[in-house]
Image 1 (cartoon, rainbow, N blue to C red):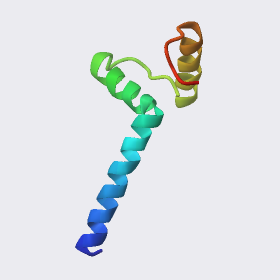
Image 2 (image 1 turned 90 degrees about the vertical axis):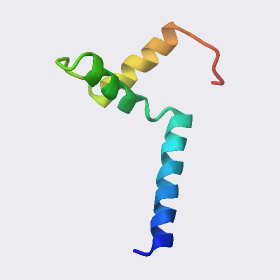
Image 3 (image 1 turned 30 degrees about the horizontal axis):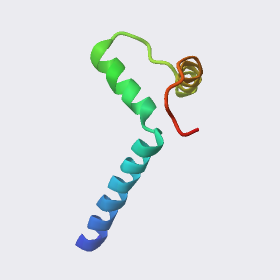
Image 4 (image 1 turned 120 degrees about the horizontal axis):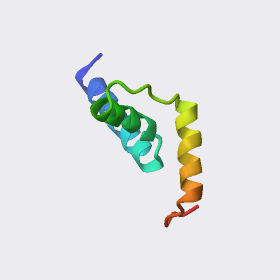
Length: 67
Protein backbone atom coordinates (compact mmCIF):
# COMPACT_ATOMS: atom_id res chain seq x y z
CA UNK A 1 0.00 0.00 0.00
CA UNK A 2 1.47 3.35 -1.00
CA UNK A 3 2.13 6.18 1.41
CA UNK A 4 -0.73 8.27 0.05
CA UNK A 5 -3.16 5.35 0.40
CA UNK A 6 -1.99 4.75 3.97
CA UNK A 7 -2.50 8.42 4.77
CA UNK A 8 -5.98 8.28 3.28
CA UNK A 9 -6.80 5.20 5.36
CA UNK A 10 -5.64 6.94 8.54
CA UNK A 11 -7.77 10.00 7.73
CA UNK A 12 -10.83 7.86 7.03
CA UNK A 13 -10.35 6.01 10.33
CA UNK A 14 -10.09 9.35 12.16
CA UNK A 15 -13.24 10.59 10.42
CA UNK A 16 -15.08 7.39 11.40
CA UNK A 17 -14.10 7.77 15.08
CA UNK A 18 -15.14 11.42 14.99
CA UNK A 19 -18.55 10.55 13.54
CA UNK A 20 -19.05 7.80 16.13
CA UNK A 21 -18.41 10.41 18.82
CA UNK A 22 -20.81 12.91 17.28
CA UNK A 23 -23.54 10.31 16.90
CA UNK A 24 -22.92 8.71 20.30
CA UNK A 25 -22.08 5.32 18.83
CA UNK A 26 -18.91 5.14 20.93
CA UNK A 27 -20.80 5.18 24.25
CA UNK A 28 -20.62 1.41 24.70
CA UNK A 29 -16.85 1.41 24.09
CA UNK A 30 -16.48 4.24 26.62
CA UNK A 31 -18.60 2.29 29.10
CA UNK A 32 -16.35 -0.77 28.71
CA UNK A 33 -13.20 1.33 29.16
CA UNK A 34 -14.65 3.06 32.24
CA UNK A 35 -15.79 -0.24 33.76
CA UNK A 36 -12.37 -1.84 33.19
CA UNK A 37 -10.63 1.07 34.96
CA UNK A 38 -13.01 1.58 37.88
CA UNK A 39 -14.49 -1.90 38.42
CA UNK A 40 -12.09 -4.42 36.83
CA UNK A 41 -13.82 -7.41 38.47
CA UNK A 42 -17.34 -6.43 37.37
CA UNK A 43 -19.11 -8.30 34.60
CA UNK A 44 -19.94 -5.80 31.80
CA UNK A 45 -23.40 -5.58 30.32
CA UNK A 46 -23.82 -6.88 26.81
CA UNK A 47 -24.05 -4.18 24.18
CA UNK A 48 -27.79 -4.81 23.87
CA UNK A 49 -28.26 -4.55 27.66
CA UNK A 50 -26.20 -1.37 27.70
CA UNK A 51 -28.33 0.36 25.07
CA UNK A 52 -31.58 -0.69 26.77
CA UNK A 53 -30.28 0.63 30.10
CA UNK A 54 -29.03 3.83 28.47
CA UNK A 55 -32.29 4.61 26.68
CA UNK A 56 -34.27 3.85 29.87
CA UNK A 57 -31.99 6.25 31.76
CA UNK A 58 -32.56 8.93 29.11
CA UNK A 59 -36.32 8.52 29.38
CA UNK A 60 -36.26 8.93 33.15
CA UNK A 61 -33.68 11.75 33.13
CA UNK A 62 -34.65 14.07 30.26
CA UNK A 63 -32.04 16.62 29.35
CA UNK A 64 -31.77 19.15 26.57
CA UNK A 65 -31.42 17.17 23.35
CA UNK A 66 -32.55 17.64 19.80
CA UNK A 67 -34.82 14.58 19.54
